[in-house]
Image (cartoon, rainbow, N blue to C red):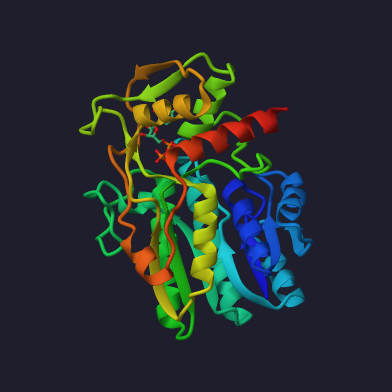
Length: 332
Ligand code: UDP
């Protein structure tokens, strides 16, 4: 069975491809390589021990490029993971985010309808909950996203839900990711953003490597356990396994799942876990809050457990160990 994965050469996406290959799916990757590397495709094959990967360097907003993929392959389902994802950049360049992230979703959905592909899995984000009461539950009314990135995810969710309603038999799964960290245990696939990292874990590993003097902790005056921001960090391998669980349960209609652990961790707790897991000191300083950040964000994970039989298995120490292991391997 052939699955089209957009953005398949990225960090989370590569891991999803490995899991799909392990389950004997054929993977077609469509990626413009704007924030990923072509070498990842070889690593995917190597890790899965399989060759069933077809790569297209295309932009998902390009309808004619998509058309040629749909005409050349019998695509059974689409997993749409491509998209820009830096919150800070989305505040500086909102049009880049609104255009790319929503047009790619619409172009892909249109191609699915046209070529009779009825299964669509979308990587959304916990940011769609906005400033809501934790833990975030799928049935909650969404609050306005705190930044353009989150708004593009909420818009894409809405677009796909409307498409599913207008096309009986169409199946849409909206996966709300919490904070993916870690790497494959081999250290071959992990988070290697081009340019300066924004997310906490890549900043942390940079400091641990001595490439940054101190980690900047954005705010210690939030109403949280120690004043620093609380997030639900999930090991990328757990997250990838969640996609396969979803794919195997696709039914017509709109289905929303939180992919998180259900456990909140503060920035200082993550620093301590990293130090303990890797026996490395991470110097840090408290600075002002980062615009667009919320205080707390963690998942209610009951629905995924109940309906998919999936739950995250890997703990914080494992996430820290694997992230550091990747960082060392990657730099070497
Ligand atoms: N954070 C931080 N220093 C950094 C990067 C992030 O203190 O260099 C904090 C951030 O304010 C948030 C948490 O770490 O409370 C997770 O941030 P990240 O960007 O990884 O995820 P997101 O904010 O998108 O959930």
